[in-house]
Length: 129
Image (cartoon, rainbow, N blue to C red; front, side):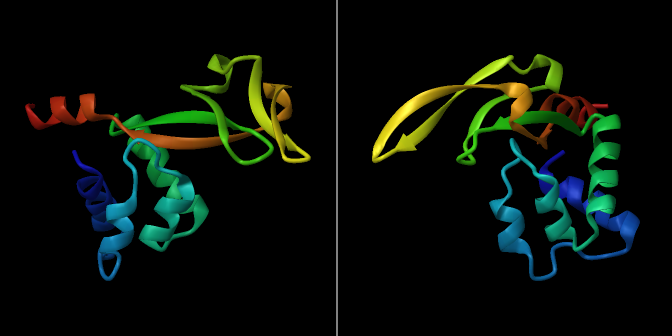
């Protein structure tokens, strides 16, 4: 199942046309990193509804849920299947007077962001079923 097919299936349940005027936004979505805000924006639904749709897709095997740890500068330091799989310590770049140095941070002290990925393995097996 492609990202477009997934969004179409959700839209069918909502009785909306998610593609009306949004083709460019959908084309820009990265199936390897689907953030909740992207789904919310593309479908024009609340954050709660977007999360509900994504979590349903995870339960049905269309998406995988992942988590990333974000450095203070906004860059991603590490990602994993869940928080327990993240390293205890990550390295982030920090600027000080025009010089960049790597600084170690405890993962527990940094912001975590959930995201989703298309599960192409499940999609392929469903297509042949």
